[in-house]
Length: 228
Image (cartoon, rainbow, N blue to C red; front, side, top):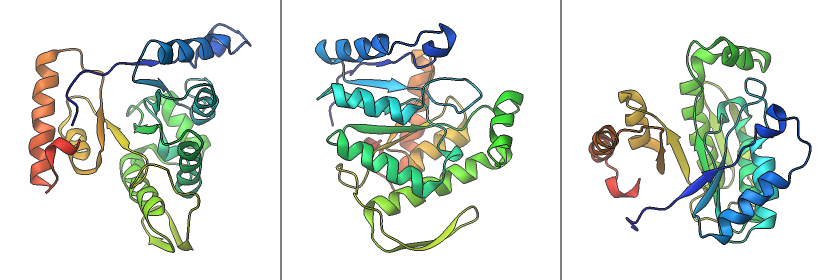
């Protein structure tokens, strides 16, 4: 596993709303420049109405059509706001169209935030169930990416005999990065379900402590700590 630092940039997908600009040249220019300068990845944030911005996966598709090497990620994507079958299909198509360059970073929104709770309400969802819903959605997507004739009976979705095509280009499906700061349930979730870890921790010491916890929790869960 490559231990050297790799750098990415977050594209300003809210700029179109905050600045009133209608020209995508700024976003395209940053993505083009990141690729030309050797950056490892470009990332986009996500929300539907809570923080107005360009839709995340649509933006990555447009950027992916202009680039050939840089990886394309979400930081973070509120997967729980989408139907799991449709999301698996969309992400798989994006991965296929970009030759296997997609990383899906998933977050959960902040608890007790009235604006974000309203976002859930207007979409017919319960913000209080967002963690369990997200965990089930991740399991469903991975099965659809890896298996054929999938049937699922869960707490939040049920279906029978679904085969998703095309599958993602990346073996085993698109890598799923899970967001968590220094919160034990979140770190345990990363260790149990994540292919990668997203955070905005600024203290090197706290970052190191959290990483050590994730590795220990991964070992407890029977996973190879270095795989995250």
